[in-house]
Amino acid sequence: MPRLILFNKPWGVLPQFTDGAARATLSDYIDVPGVYPAGRLDRDSEGLLILTDDGRLQARIADPRFKLPKTYLVQVEGIPDDSVLSALRKGVILNDGPTLPAEAEAIAPPDLWPRDPPIRVRQTIPDTWLRLTLREGRNRQVRRMTAAVGHPTLRLVRWSVGDWAVAGLAPGAWREVER
Image 1 (cartoon, rainbow, N blue to C red):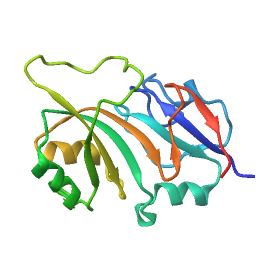
Image 2: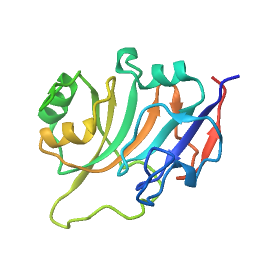
Image 3: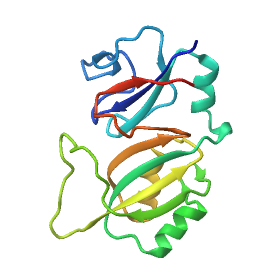
């Protein structure tokens, strides 16, 4: 039976098992032989990372052709208005071309674990939380999209991929699930 692991990747952890620069990696948290990440999650992002030992499932999760929805909770600088959310919903132009439309909505601050280290706080600039759902996965796409609409990302948490979610997992914790 193929293995499927849901991992709540903490900020600062590389989404790989080895690193020549002695930075934190998956091997500091997961001691399960033969599993590999299905997709990536930047070192400065947090949240759900799926690992499996099934190459076909790994490709299906990571490959944008399958358009598996990925939902992110994103703390951005400033207060995006309706035109900004509309732009995200229609898709924005990035240096590597237009993005697919995203689901985008402003939300109340979510009940998340504290980030270590905390984000920078500036007294004169408010922040807002957004829920963004994408069906593609370009390099640093969420960060580039929010910057393109004038609201840089302060904190980025991948909450779910398809039907799998990070709910109930503390940072650095993982659980095995059935497919």
